[in-house]
Image (cartoon, rainbow, N blue to C red; front, side, top):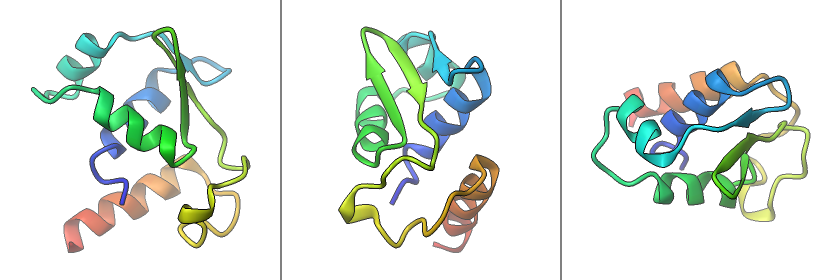
Length: 96
């Protein structure tokens, strides 16, 4: 479900400060992710899942202890480390 946005989530997690804030612009993010696609669909996917917030060009990676939207319940059943979530996503990509 989060396959397309997993690169953006991983990147944002890696470059964010202690509050989860990242100040990279969409053009730079696309360069870093080595994609020609626009970043906004990836961002919207993660916002819809409740994994990031975005306002005025600033990203914030949200903690997984936040309430997960109803349509995504069952995807995560408890608080998890981001590395575990990304491993699960990437493992699904290899198998799918």
